[in-house]
Length: 354
Image (tube, rainbow, N blue to C red; front, side, top):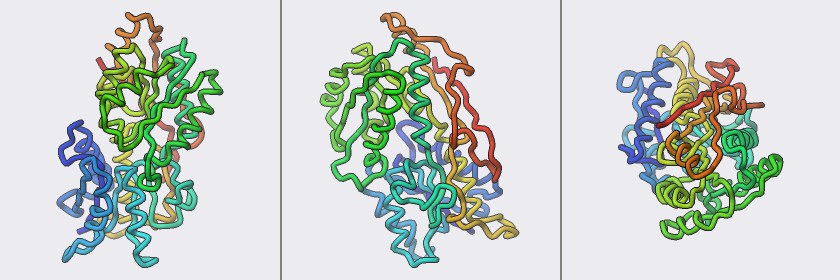
């Protein structure tokens, strides 16, 4: 029986209901390729429970499992786990490195996770978000839904030790992309920097209160997700619209988000793992991860929180009603993800939350 490591930053039973949804989607992706949990494949889940310092030990557990031996592949669900997985597998003998599939990643070529997106060249492959394409789309959507926006504040965490987490060390790159996109749209740009180790709710609320912009765009990192309620409460008290990258933000009180369906990306990661381990009947011995191209998300979603839109309108903020046809379409690599070896058109859908 094949064994698949599953490495998540979340909790076994997530306080946000996300961890189980992502695991279910990953299992569904494997099942679509005829790998059934408990029948012909064992999934070995490891959860950091919000503490990225645990990742090196969790990776070691997956690669050195005593009498059971190492797992056959590691599915990396959290961006914060990418470097611990890469370091651990690079310490293995060349030619015997455990394959790893990224369910989400930022700048995998720049950070040296892969040699090229179309030909990773090592033991790591999976999915990535093209920030050069996605960030401008988010800001164009912001201008569509909030047409009177003239200035934009962007909140992100800054890492004290930049190499500990790709998610946090890529802040400068993401900011540069956001600033270029904002400038192209004629928006004034303000940075709101929150130290990665800052867990003081009062300080974070103060950072929101002192924003001098029409809209706050929150880039999703684990420290900011943990403080989501604080950020959204402070923004609501200020009458400040919040735009975010993922649907859990509008679910909890942001105005809108534009980003990938992350559960769908976990399902796609299941497909990639299946491609590496081959067919259960052994007719296909599996593909080399180094030759399996990195892929983009198959589904992008625009999420709008209707009651927040009504509240902002009551405060005099112009919030436009928008249909699917008003959503800026993806371009370039975002427009044509690979599904089952075939380039397909990305699906863009609108989700309205009450």
